[in-house]
Every structure is written in structure tokens, then in C-alpha cells.
Length: 322
Image 1 (cartoon, rainbow, N blue to C red):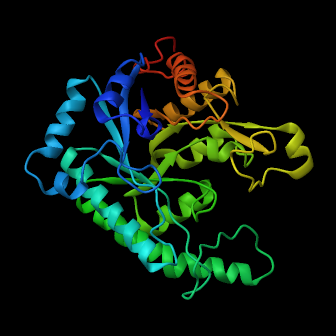
Image 2: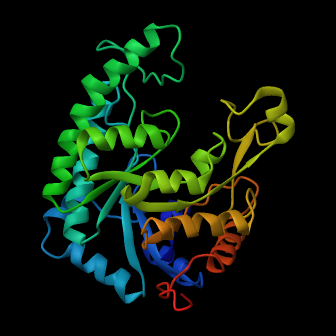
């Protein structure tokens, strides 16, 4: 495995400045680039020109290589299942552009969300179902999966596979794929080109044990984010973990995204890395910084410091003692 950084944290910097910043982070060897959607695309030019041009994508990749880095994934987090057609079409078009660009740049994986439809054809807003009762909720959920998610992702999986690219869906509350069960359900329906971008931060607060989740996902983990969560015991004691307060209301929320190590200690991250190795994952652990209590430099520095002591970079030895 090797360490990477998800670069939207540097969206205020030029591409050259971003690369220099990543180079300054000792032990970091990869970058994950946003192509649009929620991550933005501050470090990529016009996608159409990069895809259709003769050498722009190759030149960009070579610039990254010359800096001693690789590109672990292209990310286009959006909602291609959105009930508003204009939004769904825009996010789908971005996804397909990102797949084509990944193929041209020889980047193996595109990271995104599964999306969430509305509750009917006439809906205007996504509807995330989290309870089986009242019974009409299950009717809506079945409709979302059978009429929207499975048809869309079946076609998207074929498109990606035809381009030699895998899709790593980030399990995220608010979307149909938000835990292990929903990830495996979609993969079983649409095929092996669709897998998981494993991000512990969206699972910790749901009460998930990371090694168990990793072993259940197995070889469908295509990419990994390193981001932590800290639960506020006072606030969860009063309100539980479901929390719609703004992330800016840091003292009032039940949980907060934190820098790696500031929500769970090094032992937990060692268990995560060990579980990843057990299922055969040997790719990039991409640091995603979204800590409202730390600066970018301090937060990334702390994450790199901890993970550089945790991530196993060399192949395991044969059990010579047996």
C-alpha cells in the first residue's frame, strides 16, 4: 500500500502549487483528483479537451509522474439518480467524461456516489429511506432500486468495463449505497465493475466495526479514503447519532469528521490496514481532510504522520516459522 491525498483540500492552489504541496508531504506518493461535482475540478482543465486532445492527458500524467507521484483515482461525486432530470443528466455526463478521461490517463478507478432518486417519477428532491415502517417506505425503496438504481448502474458498469475502468462507490448516508449491505446488494445486481471506495468516516458513526466491514466487502474494495470521525458523547447521549445540524455547528453535533488519529487511535487504524491486507487490498490509502478543528497543514501533517507508521508498504513474508 501507499499513501495518497485527495486534492480538493488544495482547491485554492494552482495545479503546480498543489503538486508542490503534495511533494512536501513526506511519505505521500499519490493524488486523487476531482473532475467536477462536489469535489470540483480545480486541478484539471476542460475535460472534453483533455479527452479529445492528442496529448493533453498524456502531458498531465507525465507532469504528475515527473513529480514522483501517481494518480490513484479520478473522483466525480454527484447524484446521477437525482429526480430532477437536468441534475441527473449533468452528473451522468460528468461520470462518463470522467471514465473516458481515466481510460486515457491510465487511471484504473473512478470514485463517486451511488446517488439517490426521489420517491416517484414526479419527485423533485431525493428521498433517502432509512426505516421499513410505515410500510409505504419499503414500496418506495423497492421502486428506487428496481426502477432507478439497478438499471442505471448496470448500464454504467458496462460503460466503465468497456473502457477498462472500475467504479468505486463511496458508501455515504443520503444515498442508496451507505453501508456494506447496500454496497453488496448493488454489486450483486450490476456486476464486478462496481465496487467500493472504503471510507471509514461514513461508517464509524453508524456503529460499524471496520475490520468486520472490510472482510465482508472483500475483493470489491477498489480504493480507500483515510478520514476519521469523533463522536461527541454528550450530544449522542441526548440525541443519538442521526444529526442534520450544519458541520459548522461543531460544538452541537453528535459527531464530526476529524483528522486520522483524532477520532480513533493508531491501534484502530492498524486494524483497518491489517484487514485490508487480509482481503488482498494493496493500493492507495487516500487522505481526505475535512476536519473543522484543524488547519489544512496541521491536519494533513497529523494524518500523514500516523498513517506513515501504520500503512504496510512492503509485501508480507512467508510464514518461515511454521
